[in-house]
Picture 1 (spheres, helix red, strand yellow):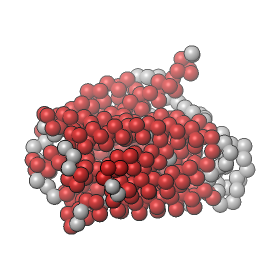
Picture 2 (tube, one colour; picture 1 turned 90 degrees about the horizontal axis):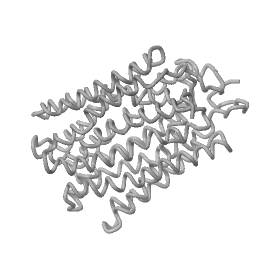
Picture 3 (cartoon, one colour; picture 1 turned 180 degrees about the vertical axis):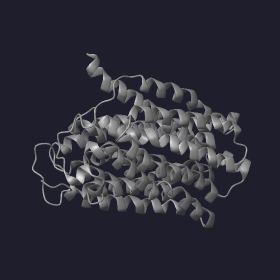
Picture 4 (cartoon, helix red, strand yellow; picture 1 turned 135 degrees about the vertical axis):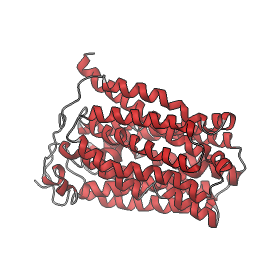
Length: 414
């Protein structure tokens, strides 16, 4: 295979590796929350605020980073972000107060925002739009696999060596992968794989504000993120507190379920999404909407049904939640053109975290303080339904595929 053919695979592999380490680090927190509570004695609301503070700085830095990435070297920005994130991860060694832990999370949030934001736009310049569902599903495999390892590592090392130990796992690999990416080869030209319409809505920031294909996909993603973020943050605590499962076992069981259902759902969703797109411009939106609806019954039974069937029900729900990861991210990437793609993804990250996992852990924690954690999870079910409804509406605005004429109201103009 030629070096030209290998270059996209190498870049995809390294970016996926960075994303993988990113999610391990992010989900370790959820695996050790009960241990942090034992040391610092914060309320559940304050524990949820750890995640909220992380995402506030993550999402507030995203639009500026996106604007910069559409104009400067994306490889340099990704590398600097990886080094900042890895350095902040090492700061865990000196976190001896809850306030210091909050500061650590703000720095990590800014570092993570770089490669999480720029990578999809970078990957879009390596692969054509009809392959992006599958390719982005590979990149986003880092979510279930990294999350699962975060739970498992957090539970295993945290209960043995203390809650700080698991955070050291990703620091040195983060430095190495970030530097390897920087020296991996020439950066692709912006728009190198573009064949779609270059219109006002797709190529300008002013047009982005009135691009319904973009906004319906983003709002659908935001409510999905609200649900997934809230469940992810509190499920180990729920299993320990309300199901009586030891913390290390709770993290292990949920980690195994997440990696199995996440791998299956993400890969299957990427292939089905590209297949559906080849037959209808609304394929990504339709698959995502249906999968959000199908995730509700499993989550409902997991929280309120027979405890003996909780893990199978949770696995079914997670499978359908992960099914739309590749297609929905591809829908967002395809709704805009290369000149503003990183900026658009920056706006997307701001919105989905502002309305999603920046607030859901705190909301669930606040409900838990006043009632039960089980009741707190009810807000995630409502969010899934809102996500499905918005994505069904978004079907009518899906942008045309290559070679198709633009339709009125489809988010583009001919």
